[in-house]
Structure formats: C-alpha cells, structure tokens
Picture 1 (cartoon, rainbow, N blue to C red):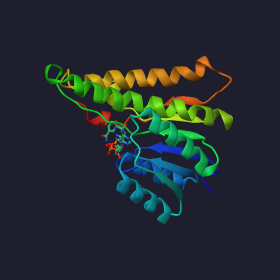
Picture 2 (cartoon, rainbow, N blue to C red):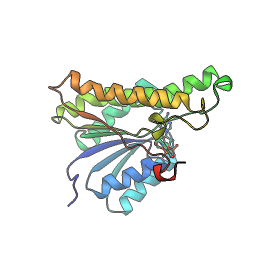
Picture 3 (tube, rainbow, N blue to C red):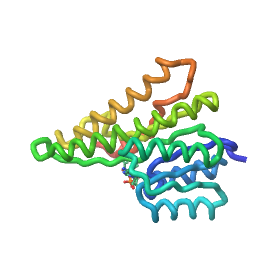
Picture 4 (cartoon, rainbow, N blue to C red):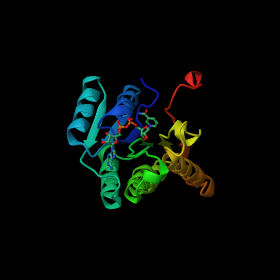
Length: 198
Ligand SMILES: NC(=O)c1ccc[n+]([C@@H]2O[C@H](COP(=O)([O-])OP(=O)(O)OC[C@H]3O[C@@H](n4cnc5c(N)ncnc54)[C@H](O)[C@@H]3O)[C@@H](O)[C@H]2O)c1
C-alpha cells in the first residue's frame, strides 16, 4: 500500500536526472507513472528501472515539450494510458546561464521556452483532465535560484526571473477559477544547501 495508490501522475523529463528519481518515488508510493522526455533511450531505461522496482510506468518519447502541438498530443495519450490524470509533475526544463552582455537573444529565447513554455503547455493541456478527476495537483519543480540573488550577478538572471513568473503564474490560476480546483504552486526547489551558504 502506498500513499498514491490509484493515482496517475504525468512527469516530464523522466529521461534522467531528477525526473527519473521522481518516477521511481511516485511509483514506489503506488502511483501509475506516465513519463515523457525528448530522449528515447533514457526514458526507456527509466521505465525499465520503475518496472524492475515493482512499479508501473508508460514511456512517451520522443516529445519536444517546447512544441505545443506535440505537448497537446502527448497529454491526450498520457490521459489514455491509465484512464485519466491526477498529478502533473513539471520537472523538464532547459536553461542557459551567462553574464548579461554575452547572453544572446537566442540564449534568452531557448531559456524562456525551456523554463516557461514547457510547464505552461503541459499544465494548460493537462488542466481539463485534472478537473475531470475532481481536482488534482500541479507540482512545479523550480530552483532556489528563483528566490535568491546569484553570487555572480547577472549570471542566472533569466533563470531567476522565469522561475518567479512560472511560480506566480501557475499558483495564481486556481484562485481565479476555484470551482475547478486543481492545486498548484507546490515547488521542490533544489539548490545549494543553505547551511553551506557563506
Ligand atoms: N540539478 C540541479 O542542481 C537543479 C537545481 C535547481 C533546479 N533544478 C531543476 O530541476 C529540474 C530537473 O533538473 P535535472 O538536473 O534533473 O535536469 P536534467 O537536465 O538532468 O533533466 C531534464 C530532463 O528534461 C528533458 N528535457 C529537456 N528539454 C526537453 C524538451 N524540450 N522536451 C522534452 N524533454 C526535455 C531532458 O532530456 C532531461 O531528461 C529542472 O526543472 C531544473 O531546472 C535542478
């Protein structure tokens, strides 16, 4: 028995890193996982790890989550995999860092697409499925960089600003539309251990 038995979670960026770990943990707690990534092999490996650990995961890959049409299609497939969606775990992101004068327009656009478009597109298309199940939760993985000033400004400024917008945007939406009631704004914020900060 897990605390998420019968729940279905859509996790983005399960091809490796923290998305893979999230898939293993959600599955360990009994959730059925739909994991999506642009990387086919990494995502298949995660599905295999989940299966070998006794869990369930459907892999959907490759999907470029910066493309709204691909996201829309993917979310419909994800909802079909286990008959609905209860949780969206917005983990996938793509970010470039750099000092302001050297940060190109292309760097900026790639970062905006990777940090803002991805969670927005996934949340937008998943929203009706969450509502259909009576609510649900959207969890946005953010960064401690969204809360603190960088040690070498302006490095990381796009990351900071976008993460803040992303946080405020999704957190505000349920308040505007209370009857639909998906919860959001819960944010794991990986970053340096505050005890180690000078
Ligand atoms: N690792 C850290 O120290 C750290 C610190 C702060 C915040 N974060 C945040 O945590 C989350 C996960 O971080 P991570 O280190 O595991 O990242 P990662 O780069 O290891 O994994 C991200 C995954 O997302 C996938 N992905 C990226 N762009 C995609 C796209 N367009 N379409 C589909 N899939 C795509 C990648 O293929 C990859 O599997 C990110 O949101 C990141 O910003 C991480």
